[in-house]
Amino acid sequence: MSLLSNDPITQLSFSLFENKGIFAVLLGSGLSRAAEIPTGWEITIDLIRRIALAQGAENQQDWVKWYHNKTGKDPSYSALLEDLASSPGERRAILHNYIEPSEIDLEEWRKIPTVAHHAIAALVRAGYIRVIITTNFDRLIENALRDQGIEPTVIASPDALSGAEPLTHSACYLLKLHGDYKDARILNTDSELNEYPDPYNTLLDRIFDEHGLIVCGWSGEWDHALRSAFLRAPNRRYPIYWTIRNQLNNATEDLVKHRKARVIPIAEADTFFTELQQRVETLEQNQRQNPFSVELLLNSVKRYLAKPEYRIQLDELFTQETDRMIVQMELPEFAPQGSWSKEEFRLRIQRYESAAEPLAKMVGILGRWGDDSELRLVLDIINTLYSHAENSAGGGLVPWLNIRSYPAVLVFTAYGIGLTRAQRWSTLHTLFTTSITREHYDPKRVVDLLFLEAWEGGTKELWENISGFERRHTPFSDYLLALFTDWGKSFSGLSGDFVLLYERFECLASLAYFEREDAASMQAAASANDRELAWMPIGRVGWDKQNLKKLIQELQTNEITTALLQASFAKANSGLLELFVDNLIRHARRMY
Image 1 (cartoon, rainbow, N blue to C red):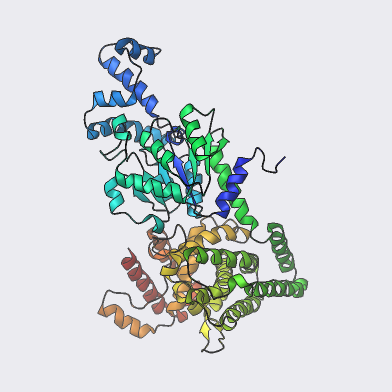
Image 2: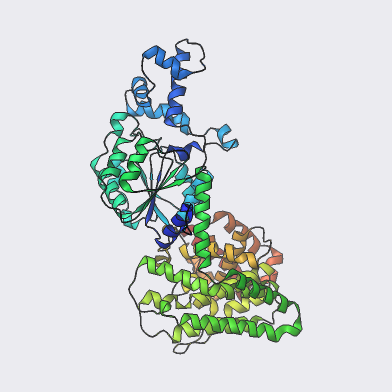
């Protein structure tokens, strides 16, 4: 017996993981039905009921039978809509109330994205799925994607297709074959669904040729133009996985046989997509260092940190882990030579994070629970990682050279977040302002070398290549927040609001960077114009209005201001601190 016998989901998980971005998803009405948006058949029965009652008929137990006795025909969604409304605009208006959630729907969690929608969106955010095809009119998948911070390229009409971002350039390409329920151009009658416009056919032919496919919630029975696209697709370079809840109907069976699709029996879409997303995530995590060994390292740090007599063992533990990282950085996959591609950039970032995760979490623990005696050790680690990245690279591609110091950035950020969580302001300021020695250049402060855009690998253009971060104002800052939301669990404790904690760290790093400025010249600049007084790296807080307001209030609170000035922030000059707040507001105004 095969190891994967009777386990097609594991087989699909491996295909999805090993062929990142290759699979597309085709979603039918079954997925929306789970959100209590009625199917076409359910709408048909309800319309028959409403028409009959409007004509004075009595309520019926079986409206299908009543309709057949009345008309001599079986109910037809297409025919009923054509009888009721002659124009697409009228049909759109009829369908609107079946799809648009009311206040009661929202209160009772109806007509909102399901667990399956959110699991698909998580796979998109991780880069495993880039193309979604749906026959549904609703906006459930768009809402789930936006909850993940993803703005999809939505194609709901041939007009939208002609001016849209190209398929290859889009992080998430959503093709709504039958249109959008707020658009009068929806397709929902037999004549409209019998043949797609030529641009749609061309696009479908390309998707079916170049992608694998996961089909869920589509019976393959009613949409004649989509069936035709399946049947004419000649290529089978990537597999099709077709989920079914019961038995294959005749129409579906024909398509499955023609494309040699692999059938996956499921209970419902929520369980299937959640399990798929979790298995892919498990495969991804298993590529990192063994989580049990990481956990042992973190427990050792906590144990050694608790007792002063273990300081030697603590130092040795960090030295060994730093040496391990240096050895890893010499592996061929980190060599700066090689050609550029988005996929290679994403892969290198994942490899750096896999190598740096244990050390970053260990350093975060020192920041959260240390007593300042560990500061020298952490600075030595950062200096060692940065120096190795700068001095051992040789020639190569500029992006690969620039991100070689990414592990130093991760260690710096982890320690800084830990210090911010512990409110160890003096140590945090020392971290920011300590100089790193450089072999061929003058020393520079840590905050001038490793913080956001001040770091040569932290440019907006570079980090927009990460899937899901293409259209962010601050993609690198947003990416670090997403990463440390996970990593920070090992050292931040019950922080309450990790986003605010992270943005507080970035805000104070910006303040330390601003200390390079002279108070007198900044005061003169403040009087002269309403533009930024000076450039400084600004992260998410520049556009996160809610947290910006909170952090400005903190910086204007006497207790916090006194603590920061005593820690040497703003050169212990309250006037310079006020100028920083002014500059922060000006930067934020521009970012808005």
